[in-house]
Image 1 (cartoon, rainbow, N blue to C red):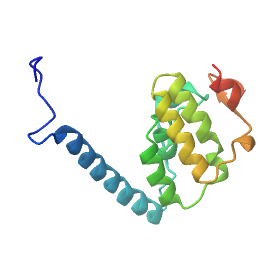
Image 2 (image 1 turned 180 degrees about the horizontal axis):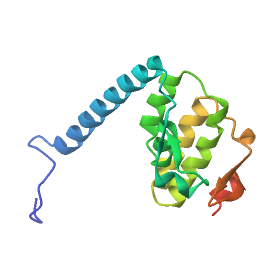
Image 3 (image 1 turned 30 degrees about the vertical axis):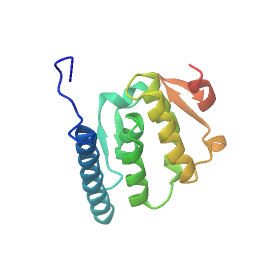
Image 4 (image 1 turned 90 degrees about the horizontal axis):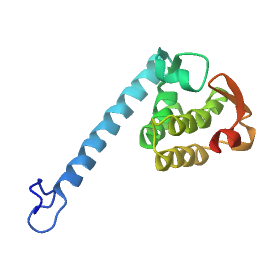
Length: 148
């Protein structure tokens, strides 16, 4: 690499760093899948944690794994967790709000937000029926939150 940095291309033009990142992500998702299935079987899949990160979109500090991956824009993790859950639950209607709040507050990029919303749509989320949610203690509809 001419700038003194380490090149990610090996001889033959292979993107070694990119391949390593994809392999690490595949391992991460496989581990998440195993944990999700095991926790679903053990009855603790929907247990929640107390975290300050959740405070940004609602007046509480408790959220579950689905909320956390949505907040962080981890669409691949969300897909794995939703597969383990089986189908959307009524309480999952807050996930689009969580995803948008993640982008608005800087936890996720716009492209990650769109990917999370796409995963939710693929799983049958009806965005017209999500109602209102909370963002910094204000009641907002999804469209008004996206427009912030």
